[in-house]
Image 1: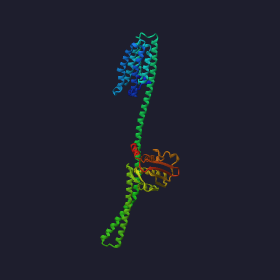
Image 2: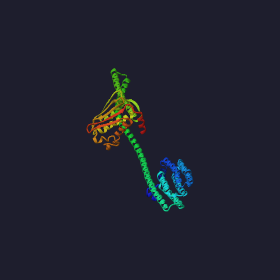
Image 3: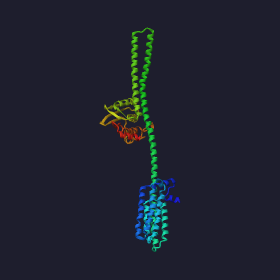
Image 4: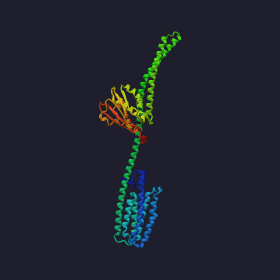
Length: 482
């Protein structure tokens, strides 16, 4: 029984899919369906006027039958659909709502003297109502057709006032109406099933896409974090190399000072202290202490600057900070790495600029731009200049221009450099995330705009426009998005 329906596309193979579809099909737009059922009850009763015209003597009987059907069947079934408990049996309710008045209609025609001479029109109206305004499936409509046509044929067999040949005309007209309604309902159900399948497939695909997107975002977050740690590791290596020089000098000086101090102690213990020896020893000790102080101060300054930059890069808190001093601290940590590669970093920052933003994100942007220039702009040991210029754009914004005099970017790569995982040095360990992180941080986190200008052999210039203070509403949106 089910296999032909499945082949015709009028039933699903999976019982769970079939249950879901039936519930969706029968309860879709339930308010409109209940309004149609109220209208059907009203029309069913108003056709008593037709009964009165055909047979005034039997009119009161047929009116009572119509009102009884409406009051005992049609209206209670319409009201029952308002209950969630009854909605599980919605299809059975629809079938009862259609079959009972359809069968009783034949009994009404039996009460009227010339009833069956006009019966086909009334039955066709019922069929039209059932097939267009109620969400009956093909199987339920077939049951309705069998019940009502059987009842009609049975009652018509008792009719005594029917003209010759009218029985054939009635059944032919009703049969054609049944055939058309079955086709119309079958086609509607077929389209509804195809749409249901499409919606379920789209929903499943959406769920898979959302899951894949969530996984991709997690992977991207891990890669971005790894890239941040990698850039921070580069800073650590540069600062460690730079600190090693003053600490090494301080260690050498302390060793020499210790030797001079021991020599002075032995001279004093011998009791043969000459003024010239004492003066010379004190001078050497003073010189050594000066060297110790200057080198240790240099190392302490580097550690302090690096600590501030490292905290900013790891901390996502927003704060207001003076841009000029902050940039000098940042460059003091980037400087060792650049000098070790033989590059020179030049900074020009307009005085008095106070930025209310995320220093960690901005530090990541500048660090990535500098590291990107070191890796890509100066290949094969070339040295060059990196320039960072900051100026006010207007009362609410600033312009930050980062440029180099390196080899530049080929024209066919300009549209790709901000794409994730695009790199020309993958064989040398590059991930292609540096400039992608820069773009995301500038646009989303810092609420700015970044533009790129470059050409082969002409160097590269990044122009970043930032607001002096972040917008609160957009900031909340960014936090929700993250």
